[in-house]
Length: 578
Image 1 (spheres, rainbow, N blue to C red):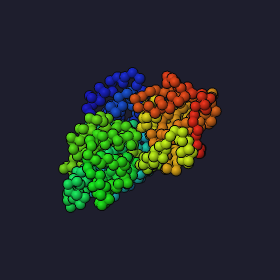
Image 2 (cartoon, rainbow, N blue to C red):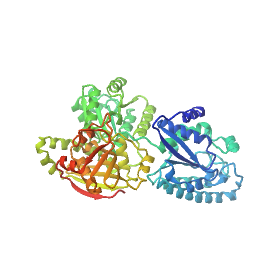
Image 3 (tube, rainbow, N blue to C red):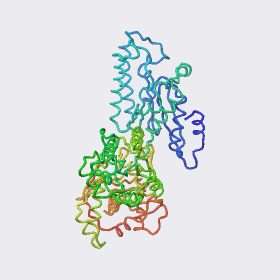
Image 4 (tube, helix red, strand yellow):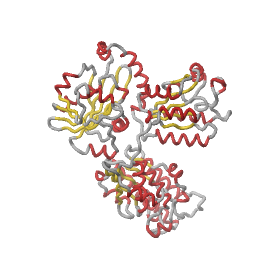
């Protein structure tokens, strides 16, 4: 991004109804253009916000963090350079580079890193902190040649590595990956010595833009994709299994098809981290089944559900897979080696993210995998991630066993051995509930999404609460599947957001949530900030059980609930938010 474009972007109106977003940029140098680029890249990612970037005092990175009041900002970006660890590692301070000084420099750097770590961790208890560690070269302060990394220089890099390892242990701290930054900004093109000397701003404009772009992606990341649908022939493996036979397909070095194997192990990694993997292939089902049985693919058949293998249009296969998963096309990615197949699928599912598998170009496949990791990557894994595939499979068993007359459904639910764990209270640190609210569409009270700062600010009020529900029955566990955000008053509760995973439908969990809320709060009335959306039909159907009018706000009394709610058979447990 050019500086003139950044200035135009941040000066453009945010629009009516936009929200304010305040970020604190903590650095030891003059923030100057980095501040401008950071505001611009945040606006580029989220056009609906008005951005304010605050900065601290020149030359006092640790002090800026220690003086920060985290509750006053929505996000914090910390940019550490070598001179923040010891001023002698910059060129604006003439403190000496004699060999005798080097031991003292490393000692000072160690103490500075510990102080910074303490101040960053303190801020991260209240706000998400994104951290960039030194991106500029060390000065020529060492007695060895530039081609050689001698002991003092190695010690400085070790201090930074230990610093990074310590910070990486906290969920509310995000470290910028230097490999990612290197792809956007070449190390030799980052340092502007003249600007550093004249103004105290050490970066070239291109590096400032690249660093700001990377930090903006850490400060307010987009929710990860949920699912991937892949082709088989010339995609998961090299060759056409129906023509070449099971033994004729390959994914190895000997037959120059290694990148197909790399793709397989990448999909297996996604599956292990909770991403749903499905197959859409124009093929003979028996031949494909033999391929998965006879050959040791790195992606096993147990990692995949469902398989859509037949000769029908792939757009139809994709529709059935999405229906089986009960997710929208906007949450999934489709991969195929045929541009024609991609065009057919994209026309039928315009919200689906489609990517071509470039089978003859190893470098392009490598770039595709990086792109997919960006779409699916997540900072940490939850219990629900490990349960997702098994719960989708078990949903089929549930539907098969519950596929009976409505008059008999009580008998089925009574024998399901269902258990719900409710957690009620402040939920600032509940990452799974935060993800649910921002990813769920169908059983969603109003489609409202929360940034991380919105989430923290919501719970800053003593009357605010999160009611979450974790579900398990004899068919398997679903993990945490419901999240309700509300405000408690003396005689009533106002529910601002309420979502429930589609995996939990038909189990009457939503009724049990309301019954627990009435019992826990002792109120006589619940009001819902309901808004109809194009996708929240299941929520609308649920509310219609209690009222003929879905005008906001929807009000439900305890008497009406008790009169209209069906029989509930869950075993209830109570816990507290971590």
